Image 1 (tube, rainbow, N blue to C red):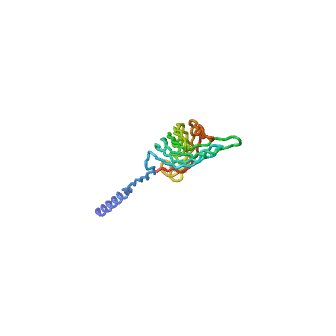
Image 2 (tube, rainbow, N blue to C red):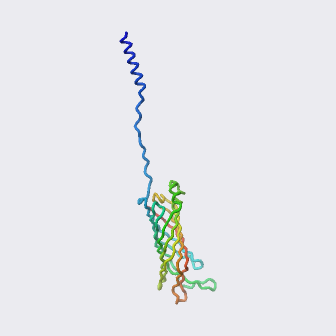
Image 3 (cartoon, rainbow, N blue to C red):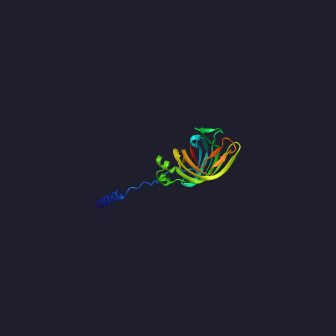
Length: 222
């Protein structure tokens, strides 16, 4: 009888002990977030552009301007730019407004070198997952020097002036940090010495000291 009672007590104590043991916890799984896409050369970004537009000259017409440009930026914020731009001239024919004969325009070849900054880049970085954030990040300002070669078929003159520019990259795919393709809107102001060519001809060529160019094209960041 005592043996039976002892066996029952041992059985009950073993069952209670088993009930009190917590079940083993499942193995912990560490979730690793995928890395954010970045430009190939990050934290440096390299951007190339192909541009076409015009240089308004009032009564003398709106000659075509075109060219290529490139930017190297640190973290898509600040850096430098270089460009090679050209503007077609007007034929050496009398340009008349009423009784006044206006001088013609020669060809212009521009070689600007400038510092570039993107003032809204911090906001764009915080909202880089949104289209409007990438648009803000792509707004840039530039200032520097430009070498301007003004020429006709017979004469040419080279001057150094001031370059001021503003640009906006409208994202089409990707963004300034991720790399991609954008629609580039670019405007520049050239302030340089006035140039007069073909002085001994009936129709002179005159380049004003201030000129503006408005261009549009595509921008690519690998």
